[in-house]
Image (tube, rainbow, N blue to C red; front, side, top):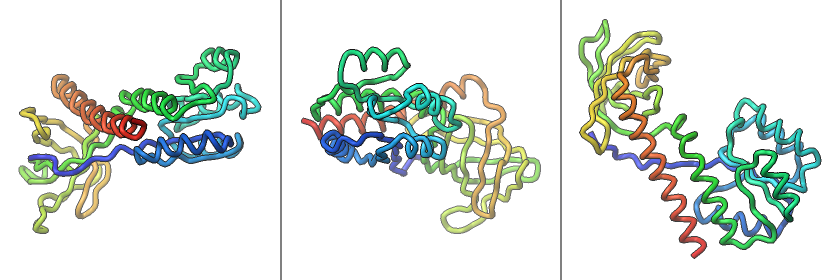
Length: 253
């Protein structure tokens, strides 16, 4: 019942800046921790991406944005990025005051050293913990007992977990059929969380299903088990973020 998967934590980052020197330093910092930002040089391109893609962190040059109010409203009103972490690149005290007043979360003051950029970005990525936990999908490999009205007992494999549900593999490694599920079907699951003695017993609805896999949305889980799952997922995200921060520190040592 152990988790044999090595999880990854992609950090989707948008960088709006045309300063070649700053870009070079920032790309080096992010490259050391395996983060490849989407770099744009203009507001229109940035706004198009904000509307179409989800980002964890948006870094932008405060003076490169013509209409700051419109740009920030574009982010906050977007369907995908209303709660993303905002990092502004500023040059003086006036920029700093305006940025904080506008609700920017972190600031990089130019001219910035690699260490300064690393510290700011480390704080920005760590600030995503709670948000990432809410939508984090943790890869796992857990043998679970499944039951439904049509199947009193079947063994399945939980391949990922979120606060709201689970992904299942319905066939065993040897190809034997463990379960056959239909969308809309109610199921009960029993499984142990990896690395702990905690057993969960959620009830869920099959959201989608194929011959080999299915997605379950939890419809009932007792409060103590929900708290256990949330705590476990938070730990998963925090460990991954700690790895990101450690790589940042090592890169800039």
